[in-house]
Length: 198
Image (cartoon, rainbow, N blue to C red; front, side, top):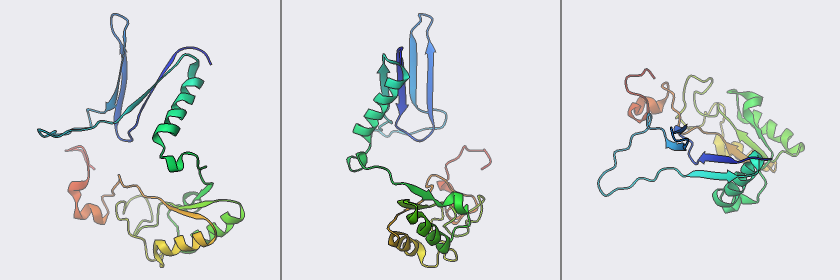
């Protein structure tokens, strides 16, 4: 709880760079932003580009105060107001219970047991979409597997909600499997380093 601390956080979930150096005059220089190795943007005349924001915090009372300042900024300026004071629900994620072997009946059974334990939300994780039985295929094909979920996602969500629980679903929109309908239809949509095997 003592000493000077500078904290930085980029409001961005993609590839970024964070670097610092000290000049020959003893001056600290700090850079944080989009990673120039993995990002290019052709800015047309008259157009603009908005880079991600960087939060910067100074504390003269150590790491604890720095952390509290970050929490305050995020809570009061970044989290949408409607969620700001709402406690996060206690949730059960299907991944640890079933991995890829999720089905309508397993999720309904989990939700019944979860409701008795005071759990407030069920999140249907990976394995709910067609042909997704392991990690080698189907990312990007966000259509329910009708063998696993014969009543669709609405059907299982309705039964989970009937137990008094909220329903959530996992997706990973930034990922695509080479063995997927999406990739076969639009390989040009897959961002990758040219010349590097995917």
